[in-house]
Image (cartoon, rainbow, N blue to C red; front, side, top):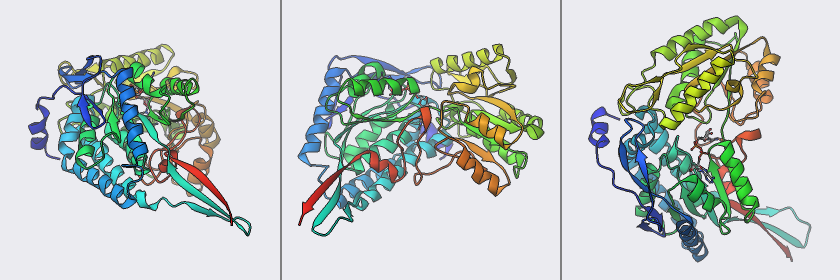
Amino acid sequence: MKQEQIDALRYLPVRDQRLLIDGQWVSAASGQTLPVVSPIDGQPLCTLAAAGQADVDAAVAAARRSFESGVWSRMAPAERKRVLHRVADRIEAHQAELAVLGVRDNGTEIAMAWKAEPGSAAGSFRYYAECVDKVNGEIAPTPEGTLGLVHKEPVGVVGAIVPWNFPLMIGAWKIAPALAAGNSVVLKPSEDASLSLLRLAQLCLEAGLPPGVLSVVTGTGGTAGEALARHMDVDIVTFTGSGPVGRLLLKASAESNLKRVYLELGGKSPNIVFDDAPDLAHAAKVSAMGIYRNSGQVCVAGSRLLVQRSVHDEFVERLHHIAASLRVGDPLDVTTEIGAVGSARQLAKNLAAVHTAEQQGARLRVGGLAIHPVAGGSYMAPTLLEGVTPDMALAREEVFGPVLAVMPFDDEADAVRLANDTSYGLASAVWTGSLSRAHRMVRAIKAGVVHVNTYGGPDITVPLGGVRQSGNGHDKSMHALDKYLDLKTAWIQL
Ligand code: NAD
């Protein structure tokens, strides 16, 4: 990734976008559009087509037709695998273009977006391409004279609804396994970050994905998302986003066709530092990036820092120093460490959360304010508040910004109690030099992921999913395929 490469792409005009339905790029039936504004400088980039009920109906009908025709669902696995590998090839060939387009849309620092967005999406398509011809059925251990076969079949039409913080990565976590399993997909990207996913859909067509197998309906959640969630011919909704919208999707399912709903929601993840951590300087550095990268707009962000009292002041001092020295700025500058906040709306929410925490008695050590490295953009200084108590909103509610809440603890039992004192259960971390303690903590913490002596980095080979109000089901790994497959029993009397 070179600065010249990025500069050559960053000012290219972006054309107004359309919907992809049945292999054709079309305007919304209503003709309505939405503005796309870059959080880098607040300037308009282009417009999105605002899909309504008629467009979602058309996309779902195309998905159903393609599914029933067998053009993809019954394509020979080796051929389906080749198509998905070709998608990965195309993502890699267009890595710079996709990364820069995505950053112009959502403001993530390019150093991170480069790997986490097209880099990760290509990896996901390759991983699931390799799975296509390894999904075996089962022969059950039945009594003499009978045969029990368990077939694994694609479910049908998958509605995928994704957020704005890592659109390509999260989009690929859903699209790739759903397609690998043989389903047809209707994708609803976030209205705050659709551009790179629309480009990905074009690359899928070029790679040979048959028309109708992947459609993209852009637009607002309340209209396009809701229409997908309530559609009577969608079999699965696979969602990543906020808890309140997750609840609406469950309600929509209950009030429509009882479609399966898989939810990957938010978190308030505890990052726990014991006084026997092997290297406090390293732990502080990694912990800072565990909350501040992508301006804290990371579902697994370690937003609650629990520090053993004996090293609390030293550790907070180290973090203060790191937070104050991080380079926040133009996300398309390769030296920037923290880019823009996704939208002016999100920035206002972050600042309000800090204000409330201060009113409730937390002490602001560093940050807590909007900054202006690029005129017109949305940026926030990395923020650390200490003296946070478990009853404060900052200890309980997800901010989704670069805001760290610090709380002291006395011993292991106290750490476990504080860590689990949340309605969420997405990620967590433990920093300790004791192998026994590490294993005890892995068992004790209620979360989908427990990092030990690191924060972030689990790759496609392991599942990501939440417990409690962080969701159900898993993205990534072979387990993600299970969401998109039905089991069918054949019971045969011999
Ligand atoms: P959001 O819930 O506001 O929106 C997510 C998607 O849902 C968007 O496409 C939006 O248009 C759509 N939507 C909104 N209202 C809808 C409705 N009524 N019906 C159907 N769809 C609707 O979330 P966001 O602000 O885009 O993303 C941030 C949230 O996502 C945070 O809570 C974050 O923790 C979470 N997240 C979770 C994970 C994970 O893997 N668990 C990963 C990334 C982000």
